[in-house]
Each structure stands twice: as C-alpha cells, then as structure tokens.
Length: 181
Image (tube, rainbow, N blue to C red; front, side):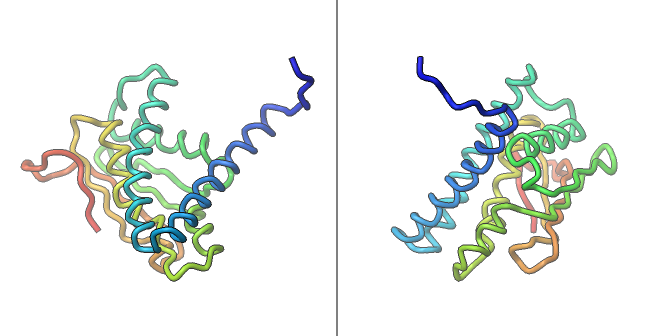
C-alpha cells in the first residue's frame, strides 16, 4: 500500500464538491466549443434532468427510504441533498409554508455564478436545466403525486434571486409532474 498524504474528511468533501462543480462546468464549456451554445444548453438540461433522478434515488437509498413521506419531507430531502452536494456554495432557504405549498429561495446558485464567469452570450443555462430538474426530483421523491413547480424569479433571467413555488397539482387530468413558468 502506498503512503498517502493525509487529508481530513472535511478537506476530502470540500475537494469533491469543488471537483464536481468544475467537472460540470468544463463539460458544459467543451460542449459549447464542440456543438455551440444553444445545443449545449439543451443537452445540459437533458443530462441534468437524468442525473437529478439518480441523485434522489441515491439519497433515498442512503437514508433507507423508498420515497418522501409528503411535500414537506420532499423539500427536506432536496435541502439535505443541496447541503451534501454544495455545502456553502449554495445559499438557499427551503420553506414548507403549508402542507400543500413549499417555496425555495436561491440566493447563490453555483451554476449561475459559473455561467457568468464564463462570459458566454447567455447566462440562463442553469435556469433552463432547473425547468426540468425539479420535476425529475419530485418524480422520484413523490412518484404518486403530480407536482407543479413555478419559477416566478430566476437569477439567470435578471432577478436578484431564484424563487420556486412547489405545490401538488390541482389539475385532476395531470398524468405526472409538470412545471409552470
């Protein structure tokens, strides 16, 4: 066995969090170089949505859960995941304001910050991905509960912070999860 340099668990977690964000950013930038910005944004949203399902399945397994108990539990799970993945890089407030309504305020989005640093023609890549990511999360967390996610404010669209409103769908014809602007 080799003689490894000692790193605390905290340092290892911090390194992995940074590497995940940089890996994602570099993948996106290289996709822009190869296929153009618009194609990269579309592809990024597809990949992020697929990965979002994986994220929630892994989190549920790690907690020994099959699904969220209800909307409040689903919000707690997403909040927990945000802390695991990003730690202090994500500044957000997750609130269950009623049994059938949750709101999330994002004050610092690492993906949006990275898009701004890249100085691309658009900085709403994360917003485009969020439009399907939240649906994917709730599809796994609350598989039998159609959920509507509304996005009245988004940093990538010029707002000072992101604001998501999550409610069970009131549309009896809804067959699954969907988002609304």
